[in-house]
Image (cartoon, rainbow, N blue to C red; front, top):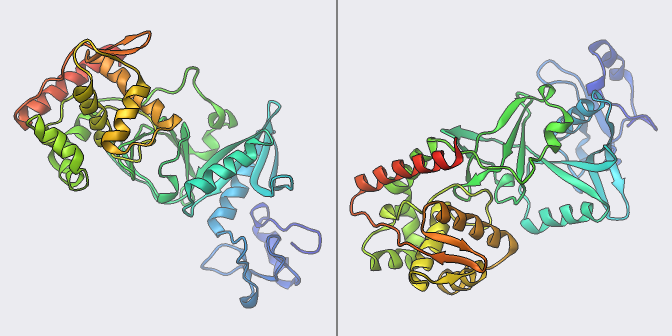
Length: 371
């Protein structure tokens, strides 16, 4: 700020930046403390707090500010009414970017630093209370290998149908539709990606009718193979109860029935996907005999007894989604009152047999989904 004027360096050309060197009296619009204009040869033009005037109450990184204004300009170019740093006194919030589209209100929140689930949910609830939908634009490093993505901490465990990630360096946007949390750090997905200018506002708001189906192809076989050969060993160290239930039936976690380990969107269990699905299958095998009918709530009660799974609506949804996989594989059948056990999963004795069975089930799924 300079008096009542907002100085937005992103909107100025190089010749327009030169006169700013001679001007004084700039101050930070966040903390009202003095800042100085810098325009050297090593860094892009920017403002910097004076040594004794650094804002500590609401600091923003250069990346945060850059992304915020980039998104605002992108929306303006599509003739969308937009406002940066819009204040909402009634909920004591300042939205990074606020815009209206087709008579609905939206807030873009740019987030890089980790935040607790409580803080995340509170912010969402606050904006919902004034009929505004929050869209989270996450920053940070994302690594990729064979449809698997390792996420920065801020993106982990978020129960939202789509994850948006923006790379400051490349100005590219990634949209993860119905991400499957394989572990607490890694997801399985097939994102839509490109330069921000290649997307429209509808790209952020689009939600498929009936929910978004998870990405699925034969890369899932490599994920299952990796778990069987490596990850089960690490899981067994902390999952003694699960390992005990497996050994009673004559196998270890690497030989879990093929019916365990299929993509379900979300991260409600806060556990490795293979582990929490093993919880469910083994609990069904233990408590419900052939021909028995049970509800998802019945199953959740037993999961709490066996593995201390705390029931919530998100967890309930994941349990039901996995039971539908067991319907596809012929282990249970849907009834009006719940699910009926009609078959016991086949147990194999060698890793080679397990991998062959995984391959066979991928073909079953591809035929069922007509992938």
